[in-house]
Image 1 (cartoon, rainbow, N blue to C red):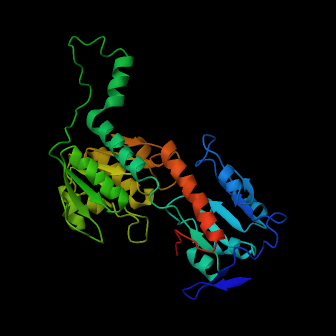
Image 2: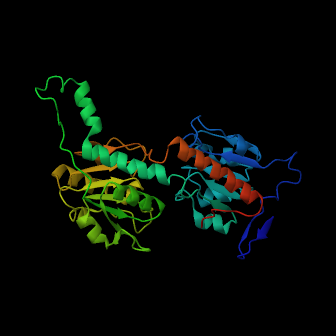
Image 3: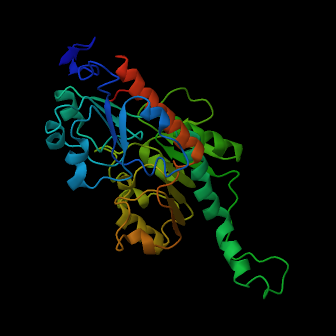
Length: 340
């Protein structure tokens, strides 16, 4: 059964498979729940909404078997393409356990009347905090200095102070931000608290306030620190290209907590190894986990973390709360956070 929305689109009725909810509960399947909840949160509120099965991970060859009969599928990184959706006639709702939804064929979901929701803004503060964790490691070398102490290098040093790496003061430097959504704005606020000047490239500039809007070439050329906060789209893929890296200062630092493919990794590795820029901190890569031949793994002065900027306990708790709220709203016929 399908029903028409107020906008004239047809979608699969959330209640059409439930004649008696107590005897025929909504089937809910979480395809890859481990990264959201490795055991320190509870799925109980979701399980109250229906017959819920949670899988830590789902390999591609198990997708159809696990999803068959489900009205609700929740996915983080498991790909749901048109072919899969067409083989799941009971499927009426897909909830993405993240903000980005490029794992789905949105057009296919629309054609098949499947509602898709995501979770916006749950990780704003956590990701903004992590930007500065990466930046401060590059600027102050806390981890590297700790390693120098533990290896005995300070004990062997004749002076009271051992400055093992060159350190950078952030006050007075220019922070460039590409993408000025919630996370970009949070990063700008922290940068200003450090005494940094903020310049921004965005396709949708708003009120100027205490930041300066500049064009794309200018944000590359003038930034002492460049932080990426744009979504992955055909336009942003490879945005940080060899040509644009050549615009940057030799002393500049690049931070990427957005999406790996926004950066041409070979070009970035080459720029780092040649000293064309001073350093990079990245929490995302083009393939995750990375193959051993990813050029950034051996690049000079490149800090890489395993896609964890989003994953504080507080942020994951907000994410799970919103996922449950999204499903409940859809079951009540008033879906929220709909994408596509």
